[in-house]
Image 1 (cartoon, rainbow, N blue to C red):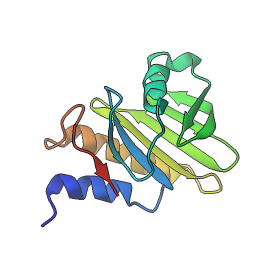
Image 2 (tube, rainbow, N blue to C red; image 1 turned 45 degrees about the vertical axis):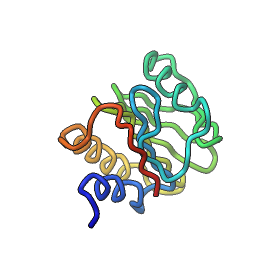
Image 3 (cartoon, one colour; image 1 turned 90 degrees about the vertical axis):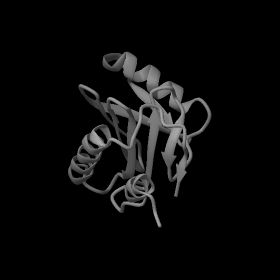
Image 4 (tube, rainbow, N blue to C red; image 1 turned 45 degrees about the horizontal axis):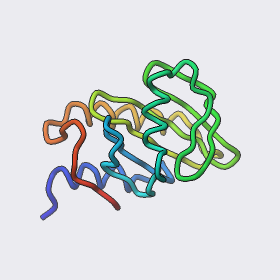
Length: 134
């Protein structure tokens, strides 16, 4: 039987709206992903959110992204092939990467909804130590 927490992460990591998805703890630890972030990328994201107004670019899964919009705790970035949405929640950083030729709006709505559920979910703790990889 699949545990509730496993199901919660699996549905996010296996959704069809994103090419790659991640959940990174506030401590920089990878909690869940379907494509692994490279060494140092999580720390760079945390550092970027600390000085969000001056953050200009980021690197994740080895790809460089140019940040084009910052909205409170939400960052939009893109490169030639992919778009990227990063959201800082009360419990983690939630990241979705999608093919650039696809619309950003449904992905943004989905990610915002997931982030709200993530923060409200009582089975999810800050800086989870379990890893979920699908």
